[in-house]
Image 1: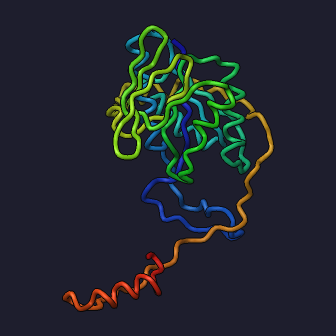
Image 2 (image 1 turned 180 degrees about the horizontal axis):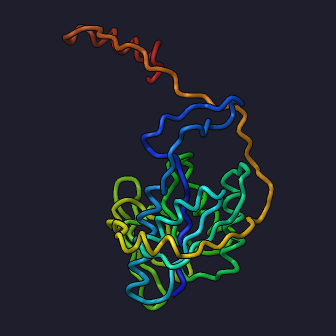
Image 3 (image 1 turned 60 degrees about the vertical axis):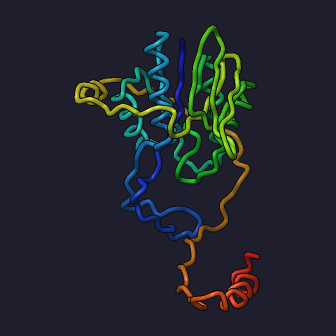
Length: 248
């Protein structure tokens, strides 16, 4: 079975994000990066599928040479191959998806895995866009995945509960927390990852359909206000919620 995991190289969750001098991009000075946490669930699931059915796992990302750090972590977890689609430019979700889809068409995988979203922009679009461009079925926010006889049975989160769906392979799956417990790279795996090759390929180009005009940090929270300590404060509280907070 041929399995491909598409991953992203994202700012560490503890990084203090600053807006760059142009006002429209992130200031990358002093920013530490990491493998997108949701993608770890996707990698682990790919490795489990390979261990059960055989085959190979390839991890792929789009970006510059710095993204190789993230690919190395995936290789250390046990992935056999890595592909870097090189492009240092700024892309929206559609342009990223287009490049991934063009490469996946050549690879012809049986299973494509993503994390349910990236923690940088949080738009949760790339996995389903890739599936659409490949004309493949997709299942998002997957918390259980069982494959048998060319079919996949998935349990996925929906509002207020879970849903069980079935689809034929090849298909795209977007991993949610709870799908599995990602393994830690062993020392042997870390050492082996240093010698595993990363294939550099030029990313397919297409138009970017979304332009970032300006980036703003959230406004600082205002001071709290106590309007009373008993039920007599309810009318004033309702007035403030309606006229000041404008939430009712």
